[in-house]
Length: 222
Image (cartoon, rainbow, N blue to C red; front, side, top):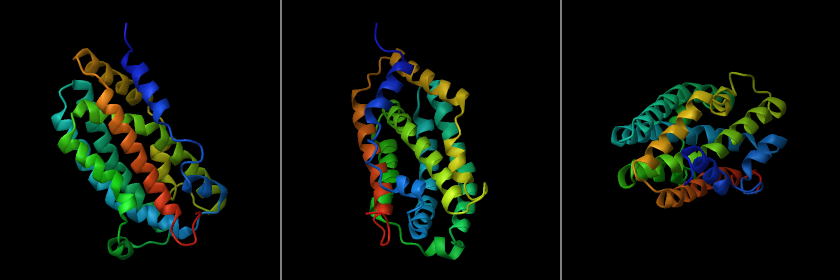
């Protein structure tokens, strides 16, 4: 008997989880050594990423053939809309106003992740894209929890300023159960995950590129 959807997802998340020292920015925020300029850049870059990912998830939801996958991707898209409002609070806590966010010039290293995610929506099977996305979430949620704690301890941010990270760091058990159901429905439909794992490896690499690009901002942690 092969792996269940839950077992497959857990295995791929373990296999693709970055090493302890691969991400150079998040530990610096946890220690209070990351400069505010890097945090402000994080906020400004995310103002480009969130709307892009929102559209990507909606596109993938429209393509999905499995009911659970459509529900997962639609829910993820809705979450991006909620996160965008909280992102504004984080940006303001970093000293950015609307003009600063609009005038900010995004960096290739930070925008590679959403660009590749959009590529998956155009070129990848939605079942493959879903596993790649879900495999990445294990690391993302942990990063957000660590950043939230660091912002409170070392940078004086309150719960409004950390709300963006708290949103992504808070587990939603019902949704996580649906992830496994979606992967199981794909397996039951004859899908195999080999290509998706390759996509997930690239997506995880692009996320690390995002964090480490920010870590290399002058005065940062490099």
